Structures are given as C-alpha cells and as structure tokens.
Length: 285
Image (cartoon, rainbow, N blue to C red; front, top):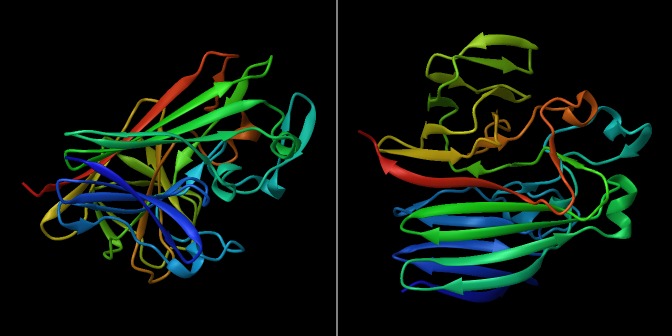
C-alpha cells in the first residue's frame, strides 16, 4: 500500500510519497520541486541543504522546475510582440511557492498535484494569464512528472520549459546511451562528436545534445533512465566543479529560445498541453 505523509523541517513543509521501499519528497514552497528520490535502494538526487533552507539562495539540488523558460537570457531580457520584458534565469516557477491542488494513493501508486497561477507580479515579466500544474507520481520504482500548461489569455502563449535534476552521480566521465551523435559544447562554442562517454570534468559551462530521453551510468552496477516525451527535444548536461552531482536536464528548447523564437511551444487559449518525464534505475545488462 502506498501512502503520503506530511512533515516539517527547518520551518518548511514537505510531502513524502511512499511505497514498496521507495519514496519521493516534495517541497511546494520551494518552487514545487522534488527534493529527494529514493528508489531501488538508492538516493537518486544530490541536495545541498544549506541552499534548500535559505530562501535567499538558489537551490543546488533536487529537481528545480524551469517554467515558462529553461535557460538564460542575454541581459535577462527578451522581446515579444514588440515589447521588451525582464525575466530571471530559468523562469518564474522555481523561485515561487506552489499550492497543493490534490493528492491520492492506493495499492500501486501515490501522487500529488501542485499548481502555479499567474499573478500581477508574474505578468510584469510574462504577459500571460496561465495555470501550470505539476503531478508527481511514484509507482513501481518509477517517478513520473506530468506538467500541464493552460493558457487563460486571448493570444497564444509561448513556453519552453524544462527540468533541472541534480543526480547523485560522482563520475564526471559520464557514460551515456542516446540517439544523439554530436553535442554542442558551450565552453568552446563548438560541436563535437558524442561517442558514448562525455567528459565533464573541469567544464564551467554546460553542453547540449538532441533528444530528451537518455540513459546514463548511475554507478558501477546501475543505470539511470530518463524517458521524456516528444516535447523535450534536448538534453543539457552541467556540473559544478568537484561537487558530487551531474545535472542531466530535459529541455524543450535551447538557450535564448525566447529571443530566437526557435523551438517554442505555442499554447493556444484554453487548449492545455501536457509534458511527461519519467525517471528510474535499472541494473546494468
């Protein structure tokens, strides 16, 4: 039987989805992010708790939610329909609290749904009325994220979201299985061959390749599988010095998509779209 429990830690409220020896922890007030995943007897995510509990810092860990954009904007600004708007890196959701909209559990799953609504404050940097729902589901050793974006405005609403998982992978020579044969290295602004091993040690900037679904070596005996639907056209990989994590991030579009207009999803009024990502571990073959 799966269950959901609530608890407080250092002044923040959390939800824990539990079942079959696995759990997922979620903190609505920290951008609705997943803060921990334990599946297949492994802690899947890295978390720097100092940043989690300090509201003045960006969280280094868990799975930050990047909405309505993933990535950076030059000068933290973009142009849309002749107007220039300011927006912080990775969008609006990750720095704002989300509300709990529902939860359920049964013999084979536990799930929780969070919601993020537009406000007068968000409309200053993103001139649309919207609702973004996140449903996190734990079932059978797999974690599923469903993201539903609904446009409440008159005009089509551009989005290019993503997720920013900090996986507890220590080896910076990342073994990958992907359909991509090349990647773009933002450190030297060059396209390079992707041969099955991606050397990230010493890189300050990220790299990107096509396709949102990928398999990576978690450690010597297990692989991490990321299954993303067709909306996620890219995977971004990023490390930070010697910190014990590797970020493997499914993105809809590339950096600066709000300015280049390339790869944006245009959500029509009252015709919501749903994006899906799954994470699980499997034994190496």
